Length: 154
Image (cartoon, rainbow, N blue to C red):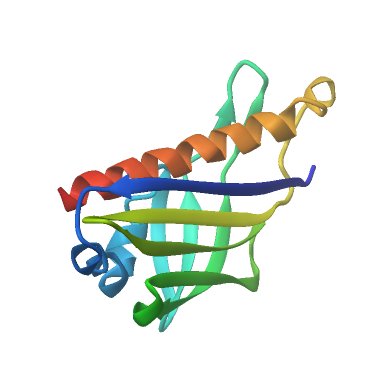
């Protein structure tokens, strides 16, 4: 089964944008904070293969190990980290961006991601509820990532 995800979340960080911008300088360590990330492999400069631990529900018999590759572009003057999918890697296509914006003495950290998960094993009786469940699971992972990123800056 294919499942589309689309997530837009943001979080305010109690630190000036100059300090938060270090997330972009060392984006590899920043993305390593993503929950359930089991392995991050450099494929070439600025391109990585993500391999995640299983995500799902034992009760519903849904378990999916997401794997995908993306190329990263940093635009420090814009406070922006973008990633675009690399085809023919894994079972997902994920693209997105992390944007920094000055908010008074703090910084707003915004995270937008969209993509498609392929070959998600979902029992027939859960096909209707699986997409919102998976979307919700990924949304929670993004929230945890943002919280852990904020906490690393404090």
